[in-house]
Length: 324
Image 1 (tube, rainbow, N blue to C red):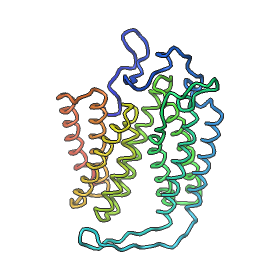
Image 2 (cartoon, one colour):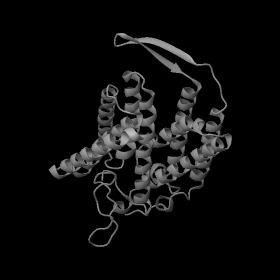
Image 3 (cartoon, rainbow, N blue to C red):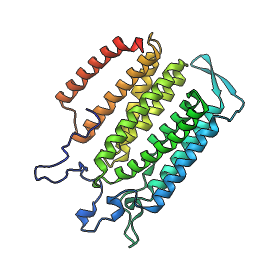
Image 4 (tube, helix red, strand yellow):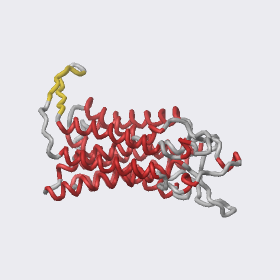
């Protein structure tokens, strides 16, 4: 619930139902042109494989370097909403920002090799526009998580394994992002499911990390809102080709999560409970947005279904959360 578009994988005629929206751009089938082979079988483009390999090893090396890099911590003090607030800029912050930008740049270069963005050798114009930045969110979030979590490993051996794992995970994500570009490709549905699972997992991990810091709501709420916006774009980008609509819904999700984080900071919740509540709110509003974009409206059945699920999940979090 919430991670699917609401369509069956096969239609009544037995043909694969891709769920591609009307108006998403003229498809190769509709135009009578042959589809490039690389669009149907992702990962066969040599340039794509090379760029994924370079990015994966670069991310792994950056995570490894972050374990030994030591930079002086800079503290900024400012007045926010009538009270002083301190912002600490440490080596972890610097590396997290750097690796996020690095991963976004590498993702851009890799996705740009897809035939739907580059055309083909016969001179055919690319079918899709230039909105490849929609793919940046999940790889950037995972790379930031790698930098934040790698130092928590108990030994240098596990830290080295975490660095290698981060590079491998980035490679897996990029291959599935490549497969999700073309909704008519054979691997689209499986790739979309895996990307959804990874997006919600990354959201939970980042919510837990930010909420447990118990920093000022202005800072923690902003970080959670930014995280929610990035991952909401990934979860909504395949529903409609209208980028402004995707951004509008992602912004609404971000505002709701930022306000929720602000309110939860005043509740006596454990770090685990607060993170789970934020994930539940994120799942609820992203799921409702997906249904609204796919169906064009929200039915009473969907609203009641999500409301019942939310109440049940809240009860379970309140009962189990304090013991986590």
